[in-house]
Structure formats: C-alpha cells, structure tokens
Image (cartoon, rainbow, N blue to C red; front, top):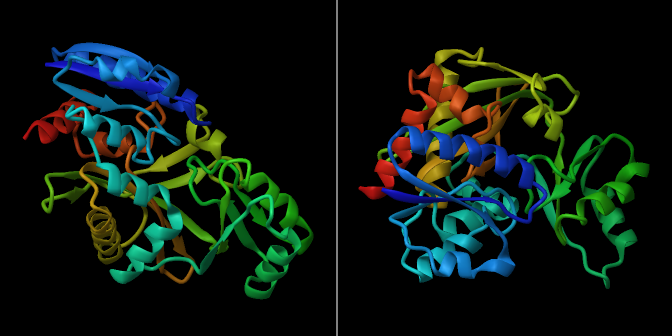
Length: 308
C-alpha cells in the first residue's frame, strides 16, 4: 500500500514525534509498503488535502496531532488513518473529561479539579481555592498536554503560583490532583473494536525522582520491568481497567493507559494515550517485544486492523 506518515508537527513533543515516525517509516518499508513522510504544519494543509495515498499513519504527538484536529481533517477528506477518531482523541487529550468517563466505569482516579486560567482570572482566588481543597503534596499540570510537560509536584504552598504559571504555558486549563506515591505502570492495548487485548504490563523505574520528559525519552532515562512485579490477580484487574478505559473513550486499534499503583494497592489511572510513543526507548514496543511481537510486526498489525 501507499502510506503517508505524518510526523513533526508544532507541539512541544515535536522531537519525540520525529523519533517515533522514523521507526514507523522504517518498519513500513521493511513490510513492503510505499512510504512517504510529511513534516506536518497547519500552515501547509495543501500537503494533506492533495494526498493520494491508501492510508495515513499519524506519528504526531500533542497539539493538532493527538487531540482530534488532524483526525477531523482526514475524516473530511475521506482518507483512512491508523488509530482513534476525533471524539476519542479529543476526550483522551482532555485529562479531566477522560477521568469523568473512567469514574463511570468504576476505574479509580485521583481526586482532582480543573481550573480555567484566562487574562481575567484572579489567580490569587484560584490559589486560595486550591489550598482549600488540596493538602500538599499535590500535582499541578496542564489539562491537555503530554509527556509530563508543564507538570509540578507542589510540596509546599508557596510553590503553587509558580506551578500554575508553568502549567498555563501549555494550556489555559490546569488540572490539580492529589499526589499519589506508588509504582508507575503502563498497559498497552491493541485489537479490533470490542475485542481488544492488553499486552504485558510495564513497571517503570525512572532514574529521576519524577517520570519526566528526560526519563521517558533519553537513553537510560528509565528502567522498564516487564512484566510488572505485581500478583496475577492485580495484573488482570489493571489490564481490564486499561481495556475498559480504551473502550469507554471510543479508542480504536491501539492505545496505552498509564497508572499509579498506590502503596495500599489501588491502581489509579492517570490517562490514556491514543498515539503512544514509538521511539527506540518507548514503552509500547517494549511490551510488544515481551509478547513476542517485533516492532515491524506490531506496526503491520496496526495497518491490517485499520484496513479491516
């Protein structure tokens, strides 16, 4: 097939997207497809409008890639693409909305609240409200952002204002959540609609105190333990939570759900990634490898699921 891979983009995750897409394009070529790469920019939409391909593989991350925007454009052009559609992409990107849906399925979520920050917002009133409802430590992060960009763990109230100012550089909506101490876990999900399966759960041990951008994408930034060191009953529960989260958002083909397993054994879902990273250090390919699925086989499986 003739396949276009969209990469780059204009979000803060541009470099991650380029790295992911390089691997995707190499795998597609290895599988015998005719591949073209497009460094996507919203000011050059004619490249998308005039596309003559069988299918698009979206290798973008963040704004305009993961939020439903490019999916909407491709839908209007009647161009098939790999992965989730407009609604699921937008919902998953909106962490607060996604959490509300997870709660309807009895998936544990951290206590949290969303605040809109505009030029007219009284930031001191927001700070007072946060302090009235959350005790330190708590987390402040952009509501619609990935790769822990703009995130702060507030350990004393004096840090709140700076944490808000950091978060609103990425999004006018901020999310404040209780801080949960525990194991970082992630669960890749893939398969036909309503027949999805979870791949082996990964336990993540970051080299830094926080599983931040550097820990995720720098070589040696984190250690991946596959399968995670948890009992079989908990493993199956978390896998089912990941599949249910994928389905309740309306995701398609593949996704990856991130969890924090608290010290008292409660797996809190953090978010679902509809376009998880596919870089050499990424989690999804690592889990697939443990399930005896090579990188190239994994990419081809996504293509075939989409075609079917």
